[in-house]
Image 1 (cartoon, rainbow, N blue to C red):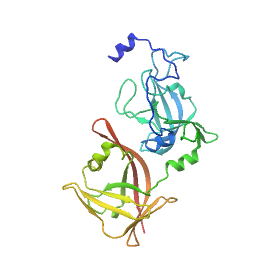
Image 2: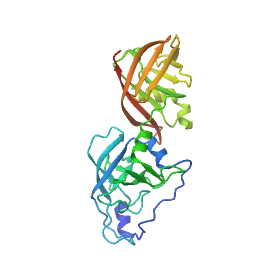
Image 3: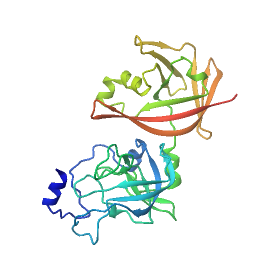
Length: 303
């Protein structure tokens, strides 16, 4: 149906215009978008790949539909490929045109992974969303990224960006973890999850079920890291949905320089873990909703 429609209509669209009408609510700058992205990286454009077969008004040549980029630095995510493909606009999508990206140039990106294969992208590849700032142009020699970095800044050094994107703040935050044996803090490795869009109404209504689903239908433990260093831990048994709070005076401490999270019980060091990776994950909920997670993987540090 789409192909027939395209054959009947000649699209004359400016390179600088988009075929969607959207309005960003809140802060849609790169600094905010990247914090909730599954994949954040510094990349270099290697080549244009797929091309459109229709004319784009005010563009001299054949408009590229996709580009191959090399991952120079990966800041966030589980992506292991050294080269990835990013798809752009065909004149009818809410994406920037690939021609906006120059071959040989560098960019900071926080793209979206394509979930289904179509004429406009392959599952596992990436795209951008025109209504957000999900990429910045980078002067690699100066090590500076330019664009809408925040509401107050239109540039950021790569060094400062890396420091900010990898900064871990536990104060006044809530996480959960797998705790099927009720002793996660005795394990050699643990995975902590934080729900990024916890204020969304569907998340508030289904918080427990969401944690269970993400945890492969196993018991889980909530960890509330309080500002004063106190730690509240509550086990949830999904068999009868009962909650049990850990007894004793639990406290936490995080060493930002070494990325080490330590747990204390009654003023004595109980266990320590070093952060080995920071990732983003998501869970499709109620067909149309998406729960976004910040994921930390940690390994035990020997005393």
